[in-house]
Image (tube, rainbow, N blue to C red; front, side, top):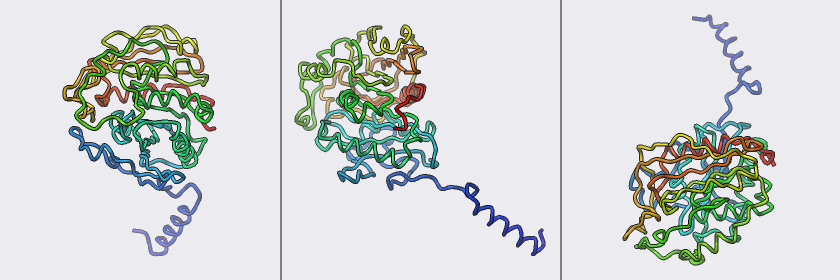
Length: 353
């Protein structure tokens, strides 16, 4: 045991070292006044997620519009740490917290150092009226994390959220920032088989879709046609879809986006096998349901196809969930595989703008 005088010297030295810059343990960074929690707030249980929970708007507030959104990030995030930023958009008629569990990357935020913003449209369908709100969220995250600490920025969108991502990458604000787009059944930059009629036959037991949602095959085809020409922006592109959404037809090998970057011929990677189901599904379209629209969550297998050796380290890939439709929530292993594909893209010059 140290003598009293020695003990005083030891304590004095400890206090002096703690006062030195960089020596004292820095507290984790808090973003947008949102305290980080594990498990994240308003997280669904493994099954039977309560309806009131999936329509929650979020725990963060975008100050300029006063609109809520979810902001998830690693609970031990340090100031100056490099992260990947993801803006994840729900589909028409949906909600932010449903999207947060449809594509549950929130479960991988700590492991892969992800900052994820999941916004909500008050009309439940995205339009140009929401662009300012979305831009404000992006600016807020860049300001809070530090623009030089965002090594990549990805847009993720399911269904009409994917179509909105396609529109956003054609706007000045986003085309200069986005490094990648992950389309979750939200359109492919290239040919796909026609959507089968059964996609539109699932019986609705819930409320009618919000106004402005394209109805039927003709309406959806018209909406997709408006975005058919490839965007001018430069980014990686991953397309994920359910096999039944394709009418059980294969995705063509051709990819204009892969050709743009001089990628090699498409290669099939090992299948991803999930023994656990996803969190959510569309409970309003099961009376009766349809294979193409989507049934209850369940385990499954996903086929992964990648175009290798793209210029600039871009990633171009297709992922098909076998035996699934449009609305079964993604299972954990295929979710993680998509995250790995996103992170495998080389950081572009867009990051840090």
